[in-house]
Length: 415
Image (cartoon, rainbow, N blue to C red; front, side, top):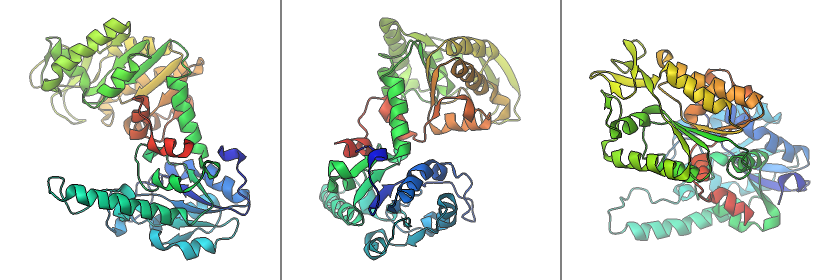
C-alpha cells in the first residue's frame, strides 16, 4: 500500500520511526534531525483523522531498562514538533488500554523498544559458545513473534518510517509487519524518499556515475566496492584505506593506518577495476601529521612516500584537484566516507574540497546522494546541506542497500 493513498480516518496507525537522537548529560536533545525527519509522516496521519502509536529505539541498552535511554526524555520535543500533547507509555508490552483510548488526532509514544530483548531477538546473558545458546536463540525468536503480535494488536495499520534500522529484522522493523495484510502496511514518507534515492543511484543511473568511498578500512567496504564495480564509471577511494593500497603497490606509508592482511585484496580491487573498465582514483599526495591531533606538525608529501614517524591524515592539494575534476563531470554521485580526519580543522580541507565539487556537480544537474554518519557530518560542518540532492538518514541500512542486499524492513512491508 502506498502511504499517500491510505485512508487513515478513524484508524490507529502503529508507526516505527527512528528517534535515536543524541542527548547530552542532562537528557537534552543535541540534534533533532531524526525527529524532524519523521514529522511529515506523523503529521499526515494526524491531519487525516488517524491516531498513532509511535515506537522507536534509543541507544543500545541490550534488552535492559536504562533510564538514560528512556524515550520519556524526548516527549516534550516530539509534542512540540507535532503540535499535539504526545502521551507516553512506559511499557511497550502493556500499552493496549492507552492505545484503545486514543482518539483521532492523538499520539502515543511507547518506551524504548530495545529495553525488551524480544525487539532484537537475541538471547541475553548467555554467550554464543554456551551449549544452550541455540536453544535460547530459538526460544527468543518465539518470544519475538509474540512481542510483535502484541505491538500489532494496538493498531489497524503499520507504517515503517525508520530507514536507519531497515537492515535489521527486529520485532518493530520487520516481524510486526507479518500481522498486517498488504493493504494495511506501508512505508512512511521518509522511507519512500530513502528507497527512491537509493534506486536513483543504483537503478536509474545517469552517466558518468562517480562513487566516492572513504573510511579507514578496505575490509569494511569490500562488499560495497565489489557491487559498485558493475555500476560506476569512476570510483574514488580515499580516507585511511588509501594507505593499504599504497603499501600494496610498494610505497612507503610511514605510520599511516594500514591493513597489512588486506594488501592482496587491494591489488585484487585494482585489477577488478581494470578488468571492468572502471576509472579507479586514489590519492597522489597527502597532508601528513607527526601526531594524531589538530595541533601537530604537518607536511605535504607524495602519498606513496611518507616518512617514518608521519601519518597520512588528509588528501593533498594535487589530489583535491584530481578528485574535483572527476566529481564535477559526474551526473550521478554517491559519497560515503570523508577524505581525511575532517574533525580536525588542520585536516578538513580534503573533505571540504570533495563536498564543494559535489555541490558544483549538483548545481549542474547531477543527482548526489550523501550517506553514512561521517559524510553527513561533513556536509553539515561545511554548511552544504542545501547544495546536494539527498542526504540519507541511514548509515548501515544505506550501505547494505548499496551492497545489493535486501533490507528486511523494506521487504516486510512490500511482501
